[in-house]
Image (cartoon, rainbow over the protein chains, first blue to last red):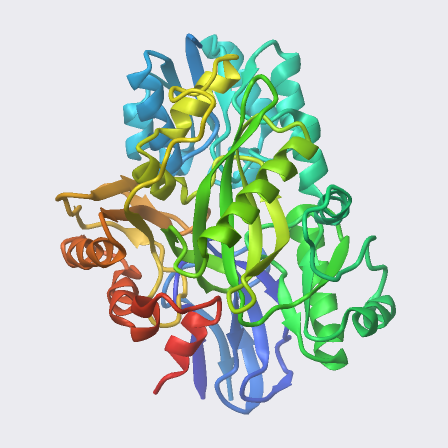
Length: 70
Length: 448
Protein backbone atom coordinates (compact mmCIF):
# COMPACT_ATOMS: atom_id res chain seq x y z
CA UNK A 1 0.00 0.00 0.00
CA UNK A 2 1.37 3.40 -0.97
CA UNK A 3 0.00 6.65 0.37
CA UNK A 4 0.23 9.79 -1.76
CA UNK A 5 0.39 12.96 0.34
CA UNK A 6 0.40 16.69 -0.42
CA UNK A 7 3.85 18.30 -0.49
CA UNK A 8 2.48 21.81 0.23
CA UNK A 9 -0.58 23.88 0.98
CA UNK A 10 -2.62 23.94 -2.23
CA UNK A 11 -6.06 24.05 -3.78
CA UNK A 12 -7.28 20.90 -5.52
CA UNK A 13 -7.89 22.09 -9.09
CA UNK A 14 -8.67 18.86 -10.94
CA UNK A 15 -9.25 15.27 -9.93
CA UNK A 16 -8.06 13.23 -12.89
CA UNK A 17 -8.31 9.63 -11.62
CA UNK A 18 -11.18 7.83 -9.87
CA UNK A 19 -11.22 5.36 -6.99
CA UNK A 20 -10.95 1.83 -8.38
CA UNK A 21 -8.82 2.85 -11.39
CA UNK A 22 -5.78 0.83 -12.32
CA UNK A 23 -2.86 3.25 -12.34
CA UNK A 24 0.75 3.06 -13.47
CA UNK A 25 3.85 4.75 -12.05
CA UNK A 26 3.86 8.32 -13.38
CA UNK A 27 0.12 8.63 -14.06
CA UNK A 28 -1.46 11.93 -12.99
CA UNK A 29 -3.94 11.44 -10.14
CA UNK A 30 -4.94 15.00 -9.30
CA UNK A 31 -3.71 18.49 -10.21
CA UNK A 32 -3.12 20.90 -7.34
CA UNK A 33 -2.76 24.64 -7.65
CA UNK A 34 -0.58 26.76 -5.40
CA UNK A 35 0.97 30.19 -5.95
CA UNK A 36 -0.35 30.44 -9.52
CA UNK A 37 1.28 27.14 -10.43
CA UNK A 38 -0.31 23.84 -11.36
CA UNK A 39 1.28 20.86 -9.66
CA UNK A 40 0.37 17.41 -10.99
CA UNK A 41 0.34 14.73 -8.27
CA UNK A 42 1.60 11.48 -9.80
CA UNK A 43 1.29 7.83 -8.90
CA UNK A 44 4.69 6.64 -7.70
CA UNK A 45 3.89 2.96 -8.16
CA UNK A 46 1.71 0.62 -10.26
CA UNK A 47 -1.52 -0.61 -8.66
CA UNK A 48 -5.17 0.03 -7.97
CA UNK A 49 -6.36 3.37 -6.63
CA UNK A 50 -8.17 2.12 -3.53
CA UNK A 51 -8.89 5.56 -2.10
CA UNK A 52 -9.09 9.10 -3.41
CA UNK A 53 -9.27 11.43 -0.42
CA UNK A 54 -9.77 14.83 -2.10
CA UNK A 55 -12.38 16.57 -4.26
CA UNK A 56 -12.08 19.50 -6.63
CA UNK A 57 -12.11 22.77 -4.69
CA UNK A 58 -10.66 21.27 -1.50
CA UNK A 59 -7.72 22.91 0.24
CA UNK A 60 -4.98 20.49 1.27
CA UNK A 61 -2.31 21.14 3.89
CA UNK A 62 1.24 19.84 3.68
CA UNK A 63 1.18 16.12 4.53
CA UNK A 64 -2.57 15.62 3.92
CA UNK A 65 -3.58 12.31 2.35
CA UNK A 66 -4.50 12.58 -1.33
CA UNK A 67 -4.77 8.95 -2.45
CA UNK A 68 -3.94 5.36 -1.56
CA UNK A 69 -2.61 2.91 -4.15
CA UNK A 70 -2.76 -0.85 -3.42
CA UNK B 1 0.90 66.84 -8.98
CA UNK B 2 -1.60 64.21 -7.85
CA UNK B 3 -3.09 64.60 -4.34
CA UNK B 4 -3.62 60.91 -3.65
CA UNK B 5 -3.31 57.48 -5.26
CA UNK B 6 -4.94 54.13 -4.65
CA UNK B 7 -2.47 51.30 -5.23
CA UNK B 8 -4.46 48.39 -6.71
CA UNK B 9 -1.95 45.69 -5.87
CA UNK B 10 -0.25 43.84 -3.02
CA UNK B 11 3.13 42.66 -1.72
CA UNK B 12 6.44 44.16 -2.72
CA UNK B 13 5.16 46.24 -5.64
CA UNK B 14 2.41 47.87 -3.56
CA UNK B 15 4.99 48.81 -0.92
CA UNK B 16 7.42 50.10 -3.56
CA UNK B 17 4.76 52.32 -5.20
CA UNK B 18 3.53 53.59 -1.80
CA UNK B 19 7.10 54.63 -0.88
CA UNK B 20 7.57 56.81 -3.95
CA UNK B 21 4.07 58.25 -3.64
CA UNK B 22 4.74 59.33 -0.05
CA UNK B 23 8.15 60.75 -0.98
CA UNK B 24 6.38 62.91 -3.60
CA UNK B 25 3.77 64.10 -1.11
CA UNK B 26 1.02 61.98 -2.67
CA UNK B 27 -1.33 60.38 -0.12
CA UNK B 28 -1.09 56.59 -0.58
CA UNK B 29 -4.11 54.30 -0.20
CA UNK B 30 -3.74 50.52 -0.08
CA UNK B 31 -6.34 47.86 -0.79
CA UNK B 32 -5.90 44.38 0.64
CA UNK B 33 -7.52 40.97 0.91
CA UNK B 34 -8.23 39.11 4.15
CA UNK B 35 -5.06 37.08 3.58
CA UNK B 36 -2.83 40.18 3.47
CA UNK B 37 -4.01 42.23 6.47
CA UNK B 38 -0.66 41.82 8.26
CA UNK B 39 1.63 42.63 5.32
CA UNK B 40 4.03 45.61 5.37
CA UNK B 41 2.34 47.42 2.44
CA UNK B 42 -0.91 47.73 4.42
CA UNK B 43 0.90 49.36 7.34
CA UNK B 44 2.97 51.63 5.10
CA UNK B 45 -0.08 53.22 3.43
CA UNK B 46 -1.77 56.37 4.74
CA UNK B 47 -5.10 54.51 4.52
CA UNK B 48 -6.03 50.91 3.74
CA UNK B 49 -9.30 49.31 2.65
CA UNK B 50 -10.22 45.63 2.96
CA UNK B 51 -11.69 44.65 -0.42
CA UNK B 52 -12.48 40.96 -0.08
CA UNK B 53 -11.50 37.39 0.69
CA UNK B 54 -8.13 35.89 -0.28
CA UNK B 55 -9.17 34.56 -3.71
CA UNK B 56 -7.82 37.05 -6.30
CA UNK B 57 -11.06 36.98 -8.32
CA UNK B 58 -12.93 38.25 -5.26
CA UNK B 59 -10.39 40.89 -4.19
CA UNK B 60 -7.46 42.20 -6.28
CA UNK B 61 -9.16 41.26 -9.56
CA UNK B 62 -12.55 42.64 -8.48
CA UNK B 63 -12.64 45.93 -10.41
CA UNK B 64 -15.89 46.98 -8.72
CA UNK B 65 -14.45 46.52 -5.23
CA UNK B 66 -11.28 48.44 -6.13
CA UNK B 67 -13.28 51.32 -7.63
CA UNK B 68 -15.58 51.41 -4.59
CA UNK B 69 -12.50 51.70 -2.36
CA UNK B 70 -11.25 54.58 -4.51
CA UNK B 71 -14.59 56.40 -4.15
CA UNK B 72 -14.79 55.72 -0.43
CA UNK B 73 -11.31 57.14 0.22
CA UNK B 74 -11.51 60.02 -2.26
CA UNK B 75 -8.51 58.77 -4.26
CA UNK B 76 -7.46 61.04 -7.12
CA UNK B 77 -5.58 58.36 -9.06
CA UNK B 78 -5.11 54.59 -9.40
CA UNK B 79 -1.73 52.86 -9.82
CA UNK B 80 -2.16 49.21 -10.84
CA UNK B 81 1.37 47.85 -10.21
CA UNK B 82 1.93 44.74 -12.33
CA UNK B 83 -0.33 41.68 -12.73
CA UNK B 84 -3.95 41.66 -11.48
CA UNK B 85 -5.76 44.58 -13.23
CA UNK B 86 -2.65 46.29 -14.65
CA UNK B 87 -3.24 45.17 -18.23
CA UNK B 88 -7.04 45.18 -18.14
CA UNK B 89 -8.06 47.88 -20.64
CA UNK B 90 -11.66 47.74 -19.39
CA UNK B 91 -10.56 48.52 -15.84
CA UNK B 92 -8.35 51.39 -17.01
CA UNK B 93 -11.32 52.82 -18.94
CA UNK B 94 -13.55 52.57 -15.86
CA UNK B 95 -10.94 54.40 -13.74
CA UNK B 96 -10.84 57.21 -16.30
CA UNK B 97 -14.66 57.31 -16.63
CA UNK B 98 -14.90 57.67 -12.84
CA UNK B 99 -12.92 60.91 -13.20
CA UNK B 100 -9.70 59.50 -11.72
CA UNK B 101 -6.18 59.64 -13.12
CA UNK B 102 -4.99 56.29 -14.47
CA UNK B 103 -1.27 55.85 -13.77
CA UNK B 104 -0.71 53.78 -16.88
CA UNK B 105 -0.96 53.88 -20.65
CA UNK B 106 -4.13 54.81 -22.58
CA UNK B 107 -6.64 51.90 -22.61
CA UNK B 108 -6.43 51.46 -26.43
CA UNK B 109 -2.64 50.90 -26.15
CA UNK B 110 -3.24 48.21 -23.49
CA UNK B 111 -5.84 46.58 -25.72
CA UNK B 112 -3.73 46.64 -28.88
CA UNK B 113 -0.73 45.05 -27.16
CA UNK B 114 -2.78 42.70 -24.92
CA UNK B 115 -3.66 40.41 -27.79
CA UNK B 116 -0.33 38.90 -28.81
CA UNK B 117 -1.50 38.09 -32.33
CA UNK B 118 -2.64 41.65 -32.91
CA UNK B 119 0.58 42.98 -31.34
CA UNK B 120 2.75 40.86 -33.66
CA UNK B 121 0.81 41.99 -36.73
CA UNK B 122 1.00 45.65 -35.67
CA UNK B 123 4.73 45.45 -35.05
CA UNK B 124 5.35 43.75 -38.38
CA UNK B 125 3.47 46.57 -40.14
CA UNK B 126 5.51 49.15 -38.19
CA UNK B 127 8.78 47.58 -39.37
CA UNK B 128 9.73 46.00 -36.02
CA UNK B 129 11.22 42.53 -36.71
CA UNK B 130 8.96 39.58 -35.75
CA UNK B 131 9.66 35.85 -36.03
CA UNK B 132 7.74 33.62 -38.43
CA UNK B 133 4.34 32.92 -36.89
CA UNK B 134 0.56 32.90 -37.23
CA UNK B 135 -1.28 36.11 -38.14
CA UNK B 136 -4.64 34.96 -36.76
CA UNK B 137 -5.80 32.61 -33.98
CA UNK B 138 -5.16 28.92 -34.69
CA UNK B 139 -8.56 27.19 -34.71
CA UNK B 140 -7.67 23.58 -33.89
CA UNK B 141 -4.87 21.03 -33.73
CA UNK B 142 -5.19 20.33 -37.46
CA UNK B 143 -4.73 23.98 -38.34
CA UNK B 144 -1.82 24.15 -35.89
CA UNK B 145 -0.07 21.28 -37.70
CA UNK B 146 -0.54 22.98 -41.08
CA UNK B 147 0.76 26.31 -39.73
CA UNK B 148 3.76 24.64 -38.07
CA UNK B 149 4.73 23.07 -41.43
CA UNK B 150 4.81 26.55 -42.93
CA UNK B 151 6.67 28.16 -39.98
CA UNK B 152 9.11 25.29 -39.47
CA UNK B 153 9.80 23.35 -36.22
CA UNK B 154 10.48 23.91 -33.40
CA UNK B 155 7.50 26.16 -32.69
CA UNK B 156 6.35 27.91 -29.50
CA UNK B 157 2.67 27.53 -28.58
CA UNK B 158 1.23 30.55 -26.74
CA UNK B 159 -2.05 31.92 -25.44
CA UNK B 160 -2.86 35.10 -27.40
CA UNK B 161 -4.23 36.77 -24.26
CA UNK B 162 -1.66 35.18 -21.99
CA UNK B 163 1.28 36.09 -19.83
CA UNK B 164 3.59 34.75 -17.16
CA UNK B 165 4.55 31.73 -19.23
CA UNK B 166 1.23 30.02 -18.42
CA UNK B 167 0.19 27.49 -21.07
CA UNK B 168 3.36 28.10 -23.09
CA UNK B 169 5.31 25.19 -24.49
CA UNK B 170 7.72 24.44 -27.30
CA UNK B 171 7.05 21.64 -29.79
CA UNK B 172 9.77 19.93 -31.80
CA UNK B 173 7.40 17.88 -33.94
CA UNK B 174 3.74 17.23 -34.77
CA UNK B 175 3.14 14.90 -31.86
CA UNK B 176 4.40 17.42 -29.29
CA UNK B 177 2.41 20.12 -31.04
CA UNK B 178 -0.88 18.18 -30.75
CA UNK B 179 -0.37 17.64 -27.00
CA UNK B 180 0.91 21.16 -26.37
CA UNK B 181 -1.91 22.73 -28.35
CA UNK B 182 -4.65 21.08 -26.27
CA UNK B 183 -2.89 21.98 -22.99
CA UNK B 184 -2.37 25.58 -24.09
CA UNK B 185 -6.02 25.90 -25.07
CA UNK B 186 -7.39 24.67 -21.75
CA UNK B 187 -4.92 26.86 -19.82
CA UNK B 188 -5.71 29.88 -21.98
CA UNK B 189 -9.43 29.47 -21.43
CA UNK B 190 -9.04 28.98 -17.71
CA UNK B 191 -6.47 31.66 -16.90
CA UNK B 192 -7.14 34.31 -19.52
CA UNK B 193 -10.78 33.74 -20.54
CA UNK B 194 -9.87 33.34 -24.22
CA UNK B 195 -8.88 30.13 -26.01
CA UNK B 196 -7.05 31.97 -28.84
CA UNK B 197 -3.67 30.39 -29.55
CA UNK B 198 -0.76 31.54 -31.69
CA UNK B 199 2.31 29.73 -32.95
CA UNK B 200 5.74 31.27 -33.39
CA UNK B 201 9.07 29.96 -34.58
CA UNK B 202 10.95 28.92 -31.42
CA UNK B 203 14.58 29.96 -31.01
CA UNK B 204 16.05 27.46 -28.54
CA UNK B 205 19.37 29.19 -27.80
CA UNK B 206 18.07 32.75 -27.65
CA UNK B 207 18.47 35.41 -24.99
CA UNK B 208 15.38 37.14 -23.66
CA UNK B 209 16.16 40.86 -23.63
CA UNK B 210 13.68 43.67 -23.02
CA UNK B 211 13.79 47.44 -23.39
CA UNK B 212 12.34 49.91 -20.87
CA UNK B 213 10.39 52.68 -22.54
CA UNK B 214 8.73 55.86 -21.26
CA UNK B 215 6.06 57.56 -23.35
CA UNK B 216 6.06 61.31 -22.63
CA UNK B 217 2.95 63.53 -22.44
CA UNK B 218 3.97 65.17 -25.75
CA UNK B 219 3.96 61.83 -27.59
CA UNK B 220 7.71 61.18 -27.74
CA UNK B 221 8.80 57.72 -26.59
CA UNK B 222 12.17 57.34 -24.83
CA UNK B 223 14.09 54.07 -24.56
CA UNK B 224 16.01 53.72 -21.26
CA UNK B 225 18.22 50.71 -21.97
CA UNK B 226 17.75 46.97 -21.88
CA UNK B 227 17.44 44.20 -19.30
CA UNK B 228 18.56 40.63 -19.92
CA UNK B 229 15.94 38.21 -18.55
CA UNK B 230 17.31 34.90 -19.87
CA UNK B 231 17.53 33.19 -16.46
CA UNK B 232 14.13 31.46 -16.49
CA UNK B 233 12.39 28.41 -15.11
CA UNK B 234 9.04 27.33 -16.63
CA UNK B 235 9.30 30.35 -18.97
CA UNK B 236 9.26 32.66 -15.93
CA UNK B 237 12.07 35.01 -14.96
CA UNK B 238 14.23 34.30 -11.92
CA UNK B 239 17.10 36.78 -12.35
CA UNK B 240 17.76 39.77 -14.59
CA UNK B 241 20.72 42.02 -15.34
CA UNK B 242 21.55 45.21 -17.17
CA UNK B 243 23.32 45.81 -19.45
CA UNK B 244 22.91 42.49 -21.25
CA UNK B 245 26.24 40.65 -21.63
CA UNK B 246 25.03 39.46 -25.04
CA UNK B 247 24.12 42.78 -26.64
CA UNK B 248 26.75 44.87 -28.40
CA UNK B 249 26.48 48.65 -28.98
CA UNK B 250 25.21 48.38 -32.55
CA UNK B 251 22.51 45.82 -31.65
CA UNK B 252 21.55 47.87 -28.58
CA UNK B 253 21.00 50.97 -30.71
CA UNK B 254 18.74 49.04 -33.10
CA UNK B 255 16.75 47.43 -30.25
CA UNK B 256 16.21 50.72 -28.45
CA UNK B 257 15.02 52.34 -31.67
CA UNK B 258 12.64 49.42 -32.37
CA UNK B 259 11.24 49.61 -28.83
CA UNK B 260 10.58 53.34 -29.14
CA UNK B 261 8.90 52.72 -32.51
CA UNK B 262 6.74 50.00 -30.92
CA UNK B 263 5.58 52.48 -28.28
CA UNK B 264 4.93 55.24 -30.79
CA UNK B 265 2.87 52.86 -32.95
CA UNK B 266 0.28 52.46 -30.18
CA UNK B 267 0.44 56.03 -28.79
CA UNK B 268 2.12 54.85 -25.58
CA UNK B 269 2.31 56.99 -22.42
CA UNK B 270 4.13 56.19 -19.20
CA UNK B 271 6.33 53.19 -18.40
CA UNK B 272 6.25 50.06 -20.56
CA UNK B 273 8.50 47.25 -21.65
CA UNK B 274 9.10 45.80 -25.10
CA UNK B 275 10.38 42.22 -25.00
CA UNK B 276 12.61 40.71 -27.67
CA UNK B 277 14.36 37.43 -28.36
CA UNK B 278 18.00 37.94 -29.27
CA UNK B 279 20.16 35.67 -31.39
CA UNK B 280 23.50 36.55 -29.83
CA UNK B 281 25.64 34.96 -32.56
CA UNK B 282 23.87 36.84 -35.34
CA UNK B 283 23.45 39.99 -33.15
CA UNK B 284 19.86 40.13 -34.32
CA UNK B 285 16.45 40.22 -32.61
CA UNK B 286 12.70 39.67 -33.00
CA UNK B 287 9.73 41.22 -31.13
CA UNK B 288 8.17 38.96 -28.52
CA UNK B 289 5.52 41.05 -26.76
CA UNK B 290 4.94 44.32 -24.98
CA UNK B 291 4.05 44.65 -21.29
CA UNK B 292 1.94 47.77 -20.90
CA UNK B 293 2.82 48.43 -17.26
CA UNK B 294 5.67 48.71 -14.78
CA UNK B 295 7.83 45.58 -14.96
CA UNK B 296 8.79 43.46 -11.92
CA UNK B 297 12.51 43.94 -12.72
CA UNK B 298 12.37 47.72 -13.20
CA UNK B 299 14.74 48.38 -10.23
CA UNK B 300 17.87 47.37 -12.16
CA UNK B 301 17.14 50.08 -14.73
CA UNK B 302 16.68 52.52 -11.85
CA UNK B 303 20.04 51.50 -10.39
CA UNK B 304 22.05 52.09 -13.59
CA UNK B 305 20.22 55.26 -14.64
CA UNK B 306 19.82 56.81 -11.18
CA UNK B 307 16.11 57.41 -11.78
CA UNK B 308 12.88 56.44 -10.01
CA UNK B 309 10.58 54.97 -12.66
CA UNK B 310 7.50 55.12 -10.42
CA UNK B 311 8.14 58.85 -9.95
CA UNK B 312 8.23 59.22 -13.74
CA UNK B 313 4.94 57.29 -13.98
CA UNK B 314 3.28 59.72 -11.58
CA UNK B 315 4.75 62.75 -13.35
CA UNK B 316 3.65 61.58 -16.80
CA UNK B 317 0.17 60.64 -15.53
CA UNK B 318 -0.12 64.21 -14.21
CA UNK B 319 0.93 65.61 -17.61
CA UNK B 320 4.52 66.54 -16.68
CA UNK B 321 7.80 65.53 -18.34
CA UNK B 322 10.16 63.16 -16.49
CA UNK B 323 12.35 64.59 -13.71
CA UNK B 324 15.38 64.28 -16.04
CA UNK B 325 13.77 66.05 -18.99
CA UNK B 326 13.17 64.74 -22.50
CA UNK B 327 16.53 63.04 -23.09
CA UNK B 328 16.99 59.51 -21.75
CA UNK B 329 19.39 59.49 -18.77
CA UNK B 330 22.81 57.93 -19.43
CA UNK B 331 23.35 54.51 -17.87
CA UNK B 332 26.47 53.67 -15.84
CA UNK B 333 27.65 50.50 -14.11
CA UNK B 334 25.96 47.12 -13.88
CA UNK B 335 22.95 45.86 -11.90
CA UNK B 336 21.48 42.44 -11.24
CA UNK B 337 18.14 41.41 -9.72
CA UNK B 338 17.49 38.09 -8.02
CA UNK B 339 13.86 37.16 -7.43
CA UNK B 340 13.55 35.56 -4.02
CA UNK B 341 10.68 33.09 -4.30
CA UNK B 342 8.93 30.91 -1.72
CA UNK B 343 9.89 27.72 -3.50
CA UNK B 344 12.37 24.91 -3.07
CA UNK B 345 15.73 25.66 -4.67
CA UNK B 346 16.02 22.33 -6.49
CA UNK B 347 12.69 21.60 -8.23
CA UNK B 348 11.20 25.10 -7.84
CA UNK B 349 7.95 23.83 -6.30
CA UNK B 350 5.88 26.37 -4.32
CA UNK B 351 6.36 26.51 -0.56
CA UNK B 352 3.71 28.54 1.23
CA UNK B 353 4.17 28.95 4.98
CA UNK B 354 4.80 31.34 7.83
CA UNK B 355 8.01 33.35 7.98
CA UNK B 356 9.85 32.79 11.26
CA UNK B 357 12.94 34.95 10.70
CA UNK B 358 13.56 37.62 8.07
CA UNK B 359 16.89 39.46 7.95
CA UNK B 360 17.72 41.50 4.87
CA UNK B 361 21.26 42.16 3.71
CA UNK B 362 22.56 45.72 3.42
CA UNK B 363 25.71 47.34 2.08
CA UNK B 364 27.04 49.40 -0.82
CA UNK B 365 25.02 48.84 -3.99
CA UNK B 366 22.49 46.51 -2.33
CA UNK B 367 18.75 47.16 -2.65
CA UNK B 368 15.94 44.96 -1.31
CA UNK B 369 12.30 45.40 -2.39
CA UNK B 370 10.44 43.14 0.04
CA UNK B 371 6.79 42.26 0.35
CA UNK B 372 6.94 40.39 3.64
CA UNK B 373 8.45 40.49 7.14
CA UNK B 374 8.92 38.06 10.01
CA UNK B 375 5.60 36.69 11.27
CA UNK B 376 3.80 37.09 7.91
CA UNK B 377 2.15 34.09 6.30
CA UNK B 378 2.84 33.48 2.62
CA UNK B 379 -0.34 31.92 1.25
CA UNK B 380 -1.07 29.74 -1.77
CA UNK B 381 -3.35 32.38 -3.28
CA UNK B 382 -0.69 34.61 -4.86
CA UNK B 383 2.60 34.34 -6.74
CA UNK B 384 5.66 33.16 -4.76
CA UNK B 385 7.66 36.42 -4.94
CA UNK B 386 8.92 37.30 -1.45
CA UNK B 387 11.45 39.98 -2.33
CA UNK B 388 13.67 41.32 -5.09
CA UNK B 389 17.33 41.44 -4.16
CA UNK B 390 19.31 43.84 -6.37
CA UNK B 391 23.04 44.51 -6.47
CA UNK B 392 24.76 47.36 -8.29
CA UNK B 393 28.46 47.65 -9.14
CA UNK B 394 30.73 49.76 -11.31
CA UNK B 395 31.43 46.57 -13.27
CA UNK B 396 29.58 43.27 -13.79
CA UNK B 397 32.21 41.50 -11.65
CA UNK B 398 31.61 43.90 -8.77
CA UNK B 399 27.82 43.57 -9.08
CA UNK B 400 28.13 39.76 -8.96
CA UNK B 401 30.48 39.92 -5.98
CA UNK B 402 28.05 42.16 -4.09
CA UNK B 403 25.15 39.90 -5.08
CA UNK B 404 26.97 36.84 -3.67
CA UNK B 405 27.56 38.59 -0.36
CA UNK B 406 23.97 39.83 -0.27
CA UNK B 407 22.53 36.35 -0.91
CA UNK B 408 24.71 34.95 1.87
CA UNK B 409 23.48 37.73 4.15
CA UNK B 410 19.76 37.18 3.51
CA UNK B 411 18.11 34.98 6.15
CA UNK B 412 14.55 33.75 5.72
CA UNK B 413 13.35 30.80 7.80
CA UNK B 414 10.02 29.05 8.32
CA UNK B 415 9.51 28.18 4.65
CA UNK B 416 11.61 27.11 1.70
CA UNK B 417 13.15 29.81 -0.49
CA UNK B 418 15.24 29.74 -3.65
CA UNK B 419 18.14 31.66 -2.05
CA UNK B 420 20.34 28.56 -2.36
CA UNK B 421 19.54 28.48 -6.07
CA UNK B 422 20.72 32.08 -6.39
CA UNK B 423 23.98 31.23 -4.59
CA UNK B 424 24.42 28.39 -7.07
CA UNK B 425 23.59 30.63 -10.05
CA UNK B 426 26.14 33.25 -9.00
CA UNK B 427 28.83 30.54 -8.91
CA UNK B 428 27.81 28.82 -12.15
CA UNK B 429 30.54 29.14 -14.77
CA UNK B 430 28.01 29.69 -17.54
CA UNK B 431 26.23 32.54 -15.77
CA UNK B 432 29.46 34.15 -14.57
CA UNK B 433 30.86 34.05 -18.13
CA UNK B 434 27.86 36.05 -19.35
CA UNK B 435 27.50 33.68 -22.33
CA UNK B 436 24.16 32.12 -21.37
CA UNK B 437 20.66 31.86 -22.83
CA UNK B 438 17.15 30.84 -21.74
CA UNK B 439 18.28 27.18 -21.46
CA UNK B 440 20.64 27.99 -18.55
CA UNK B 441 18.53 26.64 -15.66
CA UNK B 442 17.63 23.44 -17.52
CA UNK B 443 21.34 22.83 -18.08
CA UNK B 444 22.15 23.58 -14.41
CA UNK B 445 19.50 21.09 -13.32
CA UNK B 446 20.48 18.43 -15.87
CA UNK B 447 23.96 18.10 -14.35
CA UNK B 448 24.33 15.10 -12.02
